[in-house]
Image (cartoon, rainbow, N blue to C red; front, side, top):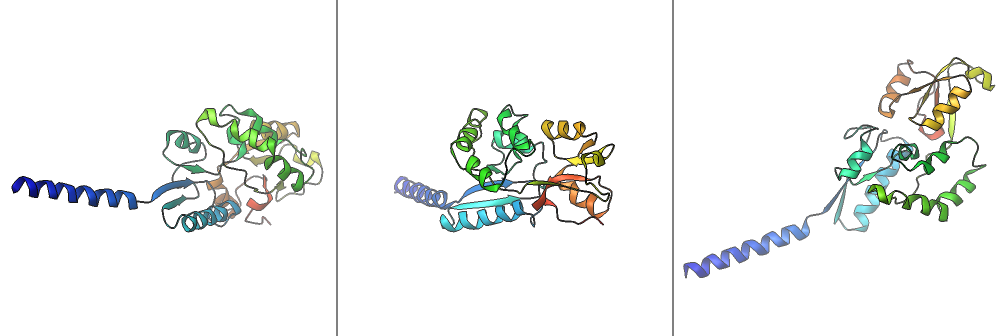
Length: 219
């Protein structure tokens, strides 16, 4: 009788544990380096909403914006190690990873408009580029539009010569660095999580970034 009770107890425990395990949601840690009220931040929140709704709660997306989990240069390694499951990095991050084909997106005026850009990223070229990430342990899901790059400054910049001698904030990119140095500027890398604060305090240099990412107007 004791053996039978023990077996029933173990069986019941096993059933409860299996049921609890089956009901446990799949957790996706989604890390990014910008604020929640930027286009990328809002897109991440929309993805969370749609993913959790479509899976009826079987998938839970945890968002970590503004470098709260990993810094700009730490994210890709964290993804490769499985510490996070999703990122939305700048394409410039893949060059140092060894996939230099992505650096083409930092070349100036290579796309005449958004339609041409979309035809590239959503077509065979885009799919081939994403597949190049797989040997690095990364599965590319798609391209997010973050806007074309613009320059902003508290000094007039009408001609290429206006950049000469100016410190100019860029994201980490060898291609962007070479562009700015060719114009006589002094490129400076500032992390996205620190950029908004430096803009508010008016201590930042002129900025070369995506139009939709600029949230503060410098006067």
